[in-house]
Image 1 (cartoon, one colour):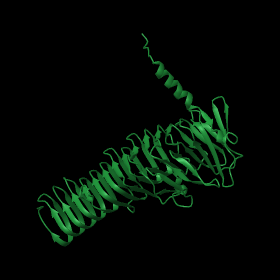
Image 2 (cartoon, rainbow, N blue to C red):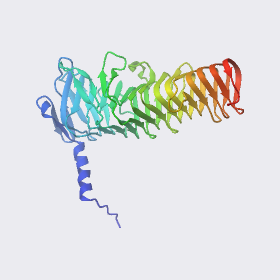
Image 3 (cartoon, one colour):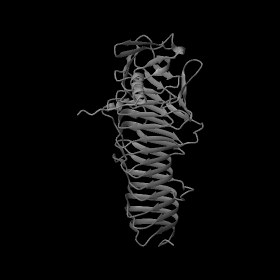
Image 4 (cartoon, rainbow, N blue to C red):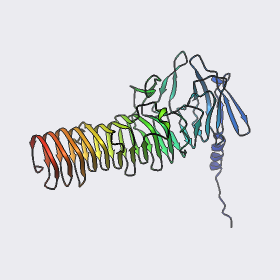
Length: 428
């Protein structure tokens, strides 16, 4: 007997509304005279507004949804270097297909303060792509000044994208209060993520092209989540957050993307510039850097997974108020500088493995629980160096410059260390 599935009237209406809205692109009256949507069967083409003297084409919408058949932005006659598409109503955008710029390549921007769901979306014909949950800020002359995010702005979800979805663009920017990447492969030469910033300035003359400005971060913490079924692969990655929890449960690979070396627009590195924020690398999380330097500037780092630098000539530099390492952190050269936390009183708390040539500067360092720190050279400069339990420090040369050095009966130092200041054993 065939199985019968029953849907309520409300469920049916919601389902139909979802599919109906997926293909809807409705121009706002503000752009009615300059922007036109042409539909032929399942295909939609947007004849964008002519570019102003600064090369900007501004297009306003009440609805902007792209179905699986995609949409084409006709830039053959508009001459735009930047195509701005902004939703002015209260409708969220659902992007399910390819967004293609036909004609002259241009920076394609989709802006919707109500939120954007990229579910299997992709882009082509553009050298730079921006998704933003903020409002567009234009000058009187019609140039892009930046993006304004408020606490009420919605999220940007990127889900079910394939490896080729963004690989053709030189730079992919995501700007929102909250960002989620789920069940996706995000591959692009240059990736920039901004979360929790009220104001983000567009600065094309700078290396990254975007700059966070002082502003309110909101009462609630923002979130940047990379789920366990996702893989982010990029030549350069820059993350800037304010009052944000960053949680990585997937894979982040930073290094050359194919033969895209010539497309590098940043300084070939993984950089996290976090204000009042926390980076949590989950037990299944993996951050792998293959050919670049890494700079993590954070309020707090919690690593339960793996942070690994492959290239022997590259450096992992961590500047953080609190570092809690319960996983593996390794590179040929690791520089760690930290300030002690008021809550924990510990600058660097290592329960895991630190491997590489290490330079550590912190107010307090704790080294715990049957794990080891192994390096050719270790240089530690701190107010208090605490070494406890069954941990082991192994290296050829070690320099400890500290007020007090403690370690337990079970702790072990295998090296020819140079100790400056007072040494005590065991822990009082």
